[in-house]
Length: 464
Image (cartoon, rainbow, N blue to C red):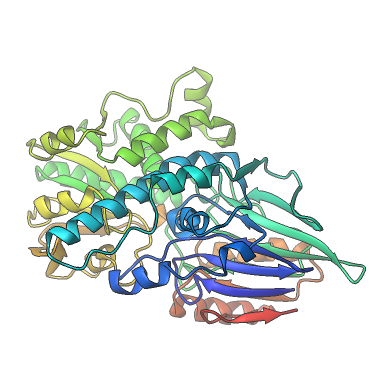
């Protein structure tokens, strides 16, 4: 077996790991790199391998940093199967179309500014072609990845449909198993089922996004959300939340619904200003079988034939004119808009309009990669660049890591310990999807527990 780490190595975007076993080539994820335009544009055009040399793709989940280059892979000639869960396939249908649209609009914007126009990686027709190659599988049910290699998905607890992956094959008469964690979630997140360990592994590729810190509790995050909303409304301001359209937006809606029902936040408008979030929420409505039946609100709403996401304070604004009208409306409100790292989407318009008002709050509820606008907001820069213009950052900035859909340091170790408990032959842990500081810290903690840990460099490979 050989694994080549072609993305999300010593960084947190562009997930892509190439596995070669028994003469076959399997690609785990095919995500977009995100960050500085000049760097990511070039990196995104370099595929992990020639498209016609890849025999199968196994996709952990639908986030763009894991799935966003699939249409480009197909455009370049990939004709094999893309294995995923059913909900991941449904989410990719809306997310990849949105990605194609954003690339087209970005190219048009740069052209209007007189800057070199970079052709989009792919178009809607490439998204449509890629979707025909998806083959969905149920959790826990073995499936043939390629002849001689069996796959299995287990719940990763990150977003709807997210999975950790097991690959199994025979080599020299011995059964071998490689695991890929995907993005590991947190126990107790709203709606979705908790992460499950992988089993009987020889090796595991594991994410490490928050390997150097612990989060506040999920329950504590909901209480902090109520505090921030109430304080901002009392100032007459609005709460701006850059949020991934898939997963984070729906979790926030779930908690805002619960807080509103309990009378813990003022009754102010909640605006979901993202066409993608609107479509993704529809996918959530159609995939309630993946929800955690132990969640009280899941039992209450789905049991009564209602949706968690629909209550009187919520307004979806898929139409751009509705978005503009809402932006100029007076009074307190909560605005949830993509993108989660504030690199694109309608959140940029809200930041340009509202970041300079001290009554407002910008609430960060997820990881912000280096060189993104979201990271600069977290760093509380005096000014931020939006649409090429400098905007004063006078709004309050709050960070709630309790809303992270990524496991923290302790939770990562617990997941790996549970995996090792079933995997007496576990030999190596390869840390990916993390910045160097987080990876180095997690590696030290794991080595102290007698794990053999490697941190692959970009483009490096290991042979076992």
